Amino acid sequence: MDYTTKFFNKKQQMTCLKNMCENFANEADKDLNWDHWFNSVGGLVENGIAQCISLYCDKKLVGFTVISFFPDLISGQLYVTEGAFYIVPEHRNGKGFDFLLDVAEYQAKQKQAKQINMIALSSIKGGKAGLLYQRRGYKELERVFFKRFD
View: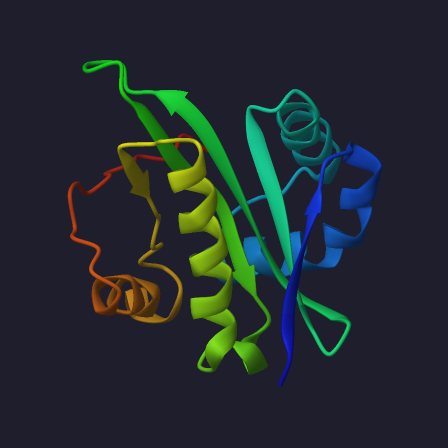
């Protein structure tokens, strides 16, 4: 399998991600407002605050990630934070995950970020993504607790 990436720098390029965003939302038990996601993330991408990196296998779109660049509120150092990371199920256990993460890490280093933060939702297959990150040298730093108001 031959993996490549493309960077989406314009919001309109991101329209092809709608189905993947819907699949991610379903797997993560989250509500997706596509128009809101498209406009807000697209705006961040167009303004250089975030990058949208799409993953292709043999010229077919199989995943994407969105990473954002913000200074840490305490130290002021540049941190890169993943805002979305999705790969279609048939490419998750192969080299696709590593390939896309390599590109995200490279982009973080190019921006001279001091840290990259990746999110592993525990609602997705028992937090398996966390194990993949740990295999790559990531350490669990925090846990987020939430309460829904329905």
